[in-house]
Image (cartoon, rainbow, N blue to C red; front, side, top):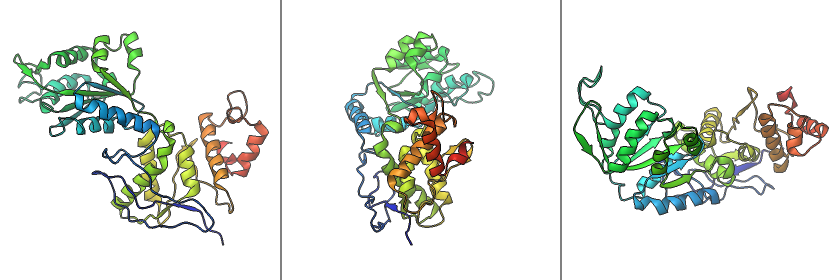
Length: 358
């Protein structure tokens, strides 16, 4: 009786504090020329996994700008790993022995953000029962990472600009000028140039932040890194949960690689964690993202299915999700796939996915 083809993890794992030693052996199915091998990863940078050209270009920029002390603005979609890049810049700078302090400008209410950044004096507002230092003082000599800078209120942008230019500020309710030596790394998933045009972000602050602009590519532009990321997250979560997962089905890896990952690496990590939770044996159960509210299995258990067919199935699923199940028409899945409507419907029946889009 034939068994499901599998991909072995191999023996390599990323280095750094998040690296997980591999305990997985070598295993391949007879007649199936697919095996894990050794994936090159960005072992120089903690937690950053991959070796695609798009990722290598970003890491080359990190190596260039990190030692200079210049302000950096990191752009990229949600979940692409902008904070990891910011930490890499700090870790390769002369400030690496000092604090890396993070502020999420979108997560803190506007009325509290000023106090969070600059601190406050006792009695400066209701509830200020004691003096408190802000994040700028905490990061003195180190790096301050301003995440989601595009969500900072306009009235605070003026005060931030002064700190960037003069390296000085006053606490809320205070009169004494504080001087600090802080490197700023900011990040955003917004289009700041457009916000400047719409008067939603100060132009002078934007130009001061964008001394060295960088863009972290979305996961769909670094598909080569997905197998390494899948193995990394499986090993990480399996070790944490005490699971002994030895292999990933070939059709699951093909589906992981062909999915668009709108939530990027954060979504991939969550899907892998859920898959590990649901895996009761040595083979990973692939809990792939949902389509139209229904959980889609990695692939039908059809004996003799080729990797090419399973990859095609994953691609059809992705396009159907993007078109919200619309098969025909100018913007339908058939047109996007370059197929006749009847041909696509036939393949949907063949791959046992027609029922998901009725």
